[in-house]
Image (cartoon, rainbow, N blue to C red):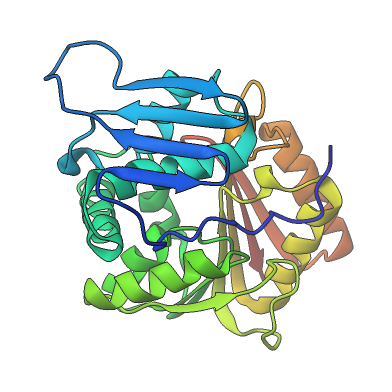
Length: 288
């Protein structure tokens, strides 16, 4: 199946819910009493008709972006695609800490700390991306939770976070102000950003293209080049098979990225293309 765009999230991350419970579209998440370290699976799951129920024993200090990996490892055979994955992810966060904003603030603080002290698996990607940002104005496409824009705001970069999901951008806007790292946000299609040519010095698309089919990915790259005065930075994972639960539909390797860069350079010979591997693949496009 191909998709025209990264489908906007249907989950309202701040929807009201009872303490220790989350109810979503066909998903119920419950927090059970912790059993201590080393006592088996952190998650159990079962289906009752059309409803998937997930129980977990995570504690507040364990809420961070690494939850995605943990869910994939322990519930990968249960989750039917990205919609269920997002519902369960949200449910774990919301059922672990009472109160919508309190839960997400805990999740964000834990995640940002791990990314910035280098302990998170994704930390090397953010570190390299930050090194590649050229100039004081940045647009980040497909920002999702917005951890990279938060990092760059701390460095006094004028950063705009964008995503197709309105609830996700609303959450980032609210959380970033409470973290005293206010980030500007914009809900938009990464292939149709309502901003003028050359609106930023650098445009980043970090782990976005694997969610998009080839024509849509090409359109996003063209839009990134339109918006960037100096540089476009693209990062993608290298996977044996696209991770469907994350919404991945496309696989990349060095040859694929080199081919994309070659086509773009042929269309605009003044462009300089750099392709390299570092915790996945990178495509950097510079205007001479």
